[in-house]
Amino acid sequence: MKLMQLFSSSLLLLCCVLFFNSGVSIVNGDLITDTCGKIAAKDPNVELQFCITTLQSDPASHGAKDLQALGESVIKLIKAKATNIYSTIEKLNSSTTDPKVRKALQDCDESYTNALDDIGEAYGSFVKSDYGSANIKLSATLDDASTCQDSFKDVGAKFPLVDETKYYSEIVDIGLAITNMFP
Ligand SMILES: *[C@@H]1O[C@H](CO)[C@@H](O)[C@H](O)[C@H]1NC(C)=O
Picture 1 (cartoon, rainbow, N blue to C red):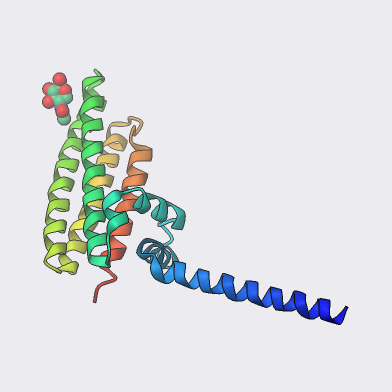
Picture 2 (cartoon, rainbow, N blue to C red; picture 1 turned 90 degrees about the vertical axis):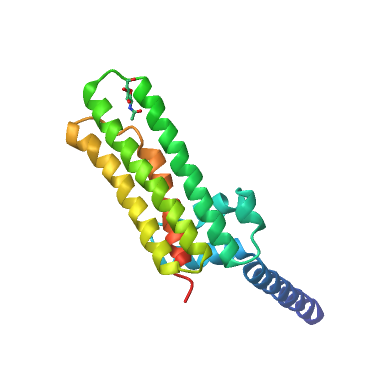
């Protein structure tokens, strides 16, 4: 009986040691998990699982070997998302005849044109290690996104890009958090 107890407690200890070791190596060894963990711990707008899933499914982010490369790929992802929203705006415009909605979409078209400029500048600053300017430009794209949303409020029309804007803001928040990780 005693021997059995000793055996099972040794086994338990061994399991603990193995589990702990693998846990540590996952955290230290995976740039995305590690970075997303730090971001989600600080920023309540970023969900840990969203961050990990989004970056793991992006080939460039998945292949990034350091934070600089990861930041660059996240800004490219932000650009891709803004481009998507821009083409959605054009599609919505061609399928509506409501002048109010047309007006709002016209404003959104301008907002996302600005956003795409800002993202280009953010990328340029980020690759030059000017993280402060990259942060300012990425923040500006969040203003652009809410300016688009407000233009629907102004004309009293339902905002058709709720999910897209939420997703967009969340990726920009990840990008902002990465620019803040550099000294
Ligand atoms: C929306 O469609 C109208 C009519 O086709 C066009 O004149 C206008 O330039 C379009 N606006 C945008 C933002 O694409």
